[in-house]
Image 1 (cartoon, helix red, strand yellow):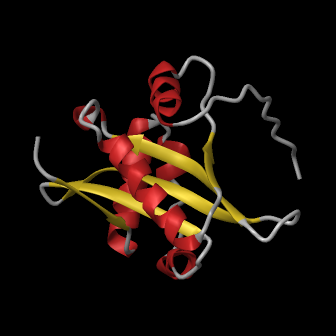
Image 2 (cartoon, helix red, strand yellow):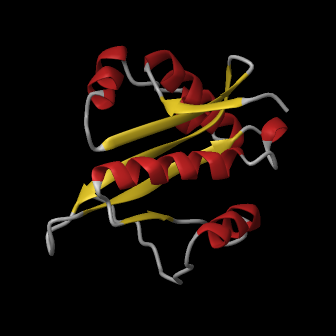
Amino acid sequence: MSDVLYDRADLPLLKDLLKVFADAFEDQESYQTAIPSNEYLNKLLGREDFIPLVAVADGKVVGGLAAYVLKKFEQERSEIYIYDLAVLESHRREGIATGLINKLREIAREIGAYVIFVQADHGDDPAIKLYESLGTREDVLHFDIEP
């Protein structure tokens, strides 16, 4: 295993991260068929409420996450939602996902977020085991509502 750098993504790294997500989730259609323009991605990168982190080993993106800062209404506080997190199969079981989440924890402390949350699908046992090792499990239902 080589040393792994955890850092916020720039435009080229963000595009490489989309490839990692496509491979890891086996979902080329969602992550590779309609890649956003550079203008769109640069605007997204400029937002304070978007946190893209990448894990780079030997100059190659091998994992990463996309998280969003959500400003709350009930109190003056924020929470962070990990929307996507993936590591290439060839680099799994090396602590990379844990390293990404620990880096996000540092950022959460810096911005004063009170919690980080993530969801996992039933049957995704490796993700569930990872998240249980890092936090408290809540059993909830998730619903997608068409706009």
